[in-house]
Image 1 (cartoon, rainbow, N blue to C red):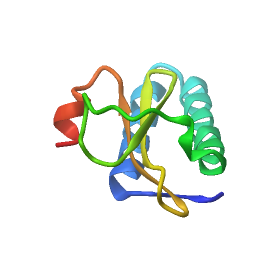
Image 2: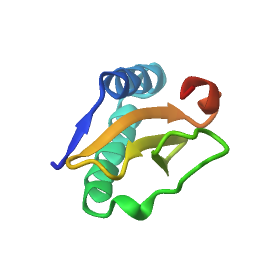
Image 3: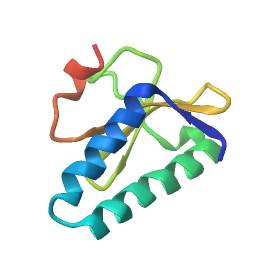
Image 4: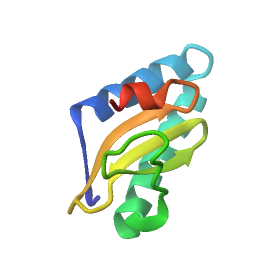
Length: 96
């Protein structure tokens, strides 16, 4: 594990798990596991994600897993996960 989670990212993951678990605890666990697996992959190859100037001018990259966007600082060591947001939310407004 070569990544760190911001407090916001931790809160995002709790909300994601709680939301999905209302329908299926098993699916919630799978989605969270997939997100954490991607954190590991991104920590090895942080340039995998995309810069999205349409969403923020902050120096972060984005990578999608299921319906969620991992927002992270590719220049940090260890990799800093800033947020994990539903693609259905107003990501640009949240990242202002």
